[in-house]
Image (tube, rainbow, N blue to C red):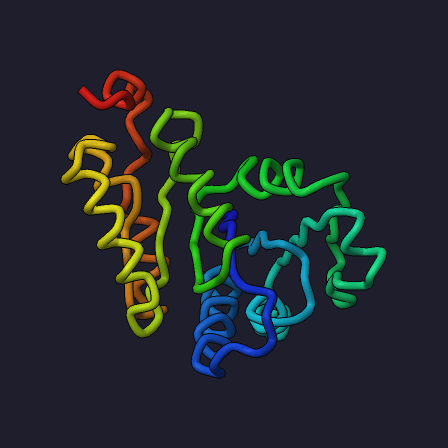
Length: 192
C-alpha cells in the first residue's frame, strides 16, 4: 500500500506534532507500506521520513526543483523525485496512492488536502482521506466543513469525503476499512 502524507515543514511547531509525525512514519514502515511525501528534511516532514527510514521503510519524496536549489530535500532518501513545480508535485503525490493522510500543517498542507478532497468529490480520486487530528488540530476545520454542508455549499454525502482519527494506531485500520469512493460521485458532486 502506498500512503501519501501531507504535513508541515515548520521546525518550530510543538514537539507533540513531531512525535505524532514520527509515530505515523514508523507505523507506515512497520506495516510494510510505502510512504510518499513532499521530500523535505525538516519540520514534520523530516520527523515523518526519519522515523519511517529508521524503521526500514520504503520512502518516496517528491519535491519541486526550486526547493532542491535551497537544499530543502531530505539527504537520506534513496528515492527522491525532483519535479518542475508545485502542481506537478501534488499530482505525483496522489498518482498511484492508496490513501491520503493529513498531519497538522499550514497553508501548503491545507491546499494539498483540499485539492485531494475536491478531486475525490469529482470522482477523480477515489481513495480514503484521513485527517490525523492530533490534539484536536483539525476540529475547527471539520466544524467549518460541516457548516459548508449545512449551508448547502456541499451535499450531505460529502461528509464521507474524509475520516478523522485522533490516534496513530487508528490511521491504518481506518484506511483499510474505508471503501473506495463511488465512481458515480459526479452525479451528486453538484449541490442540488
